[in-house]
Amino acid sequence: MTTELRTSTASAAEVEADAVVVGLPHGSGDAGPSLAAGAEAVAAAFHDGDVLVTELALVGATGKAEEVVRLAARGAVAAPVVVGVGLGRPGADGAPDAEQVRRAAGAVSRTLAGTGHVASTLGAIDLAAAAEGALLGAYTFQEYRGGDGGTRPVGKITLLAGPDTDGAEETATTAAAVAGAVATARDLVNTPPNDLFPDSFARRARELGEAAGLEVEVLDDAALAEGGYGGILGVGQGSSRKPRLVRLSWAGGDSPRAKVALVGKGITFDTGGISIKPAAGMDHMTSDMSGAAAVVATTVLAARLDLPVAVTATVPMAENMPSDTAYRPGDVLRMYGGKTVEVLNTDAEGRLILADAIVRAAEDDPDYLVETSTLTGAQMVALGTRTAGIMGSDAFRDRVAAHARTTGEGGWAMPLPEHLRPELDSRIADLANVTGARWGGMLAAGIFLGEFVPEGLQWAHVDIAGPAFNTGGAWGYTGKGGTGVPVRTLWALLTDIAENG
Image (cartoon, rainbow, N blue to C red):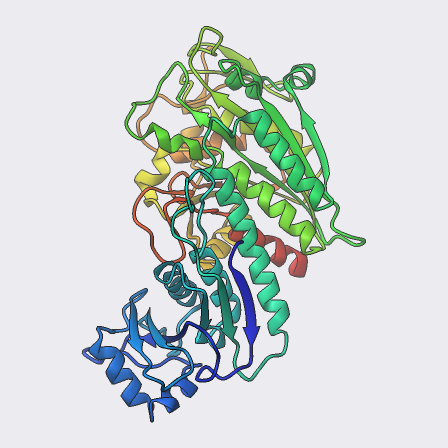
């Protein structure tokens, strides 16, 4: 992260900064905004809270979620500008929740881009959420911009944590590490496919892993052929950039609580292959390795924060291209582990490389397996662009989905209906890679993946086709391009497992 984050117990009225931020909950009915916790010193400097709220309302503040207004301080506080940010309507307990704080902090960072130093009272409401939101909202990807690189992010953010400072520094440090992992995933997703292809992606994963002290294994195309990884090889055979399989392992310290396998789809670009996609929007397929980016970043994070859970990421990487060597509709692939799959559509390639990776990951005898991928357009049809579809073992699926919602990344538990399984029957192989039906494509993909999960293993599949890449306008702490979803969901799950098994 290029933005520096600090915590402080200084008075919000006296802190030396270019702007000081106060939170504004939206009142009920026709009531205007009010002041959130942490703003007391600023309100007192304006004589009382009513004066400050009135002046903020005069410049347009309503408390609506993510609304940002500026008010000249005129010497009332040390900072020259007071920034009011809307938190939206508070919950039943009268206080904003963590996601409201994250989005407000992110909106401030985006709006104040280019500011040298911002002090924020949002840390007094929820320090971890304010830290995550502020850093993620400040994220920019400038690698390919010329000149000065465009708008600079906020230089430094000081979170005013309030009088209760016990554990504040540790909380902020952890939140900053999590935000840094999300930024790593975003950087990988935003790197264009001419620079991020299987071999270069594998090298970057190796560099990240070795820097964090992980055990790293990379299988090239020759090793994949020797090992019998027919799904990865089949999808990647149409490209001059040959496939890879990367394994990153964190041992979990001296006494790991559990073993978790993470699997992420790493299609560095997806044309659809012979079943080629329409040209419109194909540039978004640079994001088809978002699942891989997320599990790489999460495994590195586990090592950096010394999480007492053994985590191994198994990451298949391939480029799906049409050529005279490409796999075809009608081909039969022999997958890692021996099952055969009839290819009916080469654009349903993600499940083929994931099947190989799931079988390999399960050989480590994990307690849990989580796979994440930009797998189906049907996910967006069913749930939109911000809500992941989560399938798998019922109880574990629900556990993952709950963390997705708590972190603000969004997720909804979906079924794996038994009646769809016969639609994956193949005329000549063990199963086909797609059904012949138009409906239930996300669920059918989950059922396909489930065929490669050993019986009894608790597992979850997280379809992030929409949430992984923001093609619209910025909102909250999310800009355009790679979002880093579901790094924070995976981290919340891993910390839950570390605490509760």
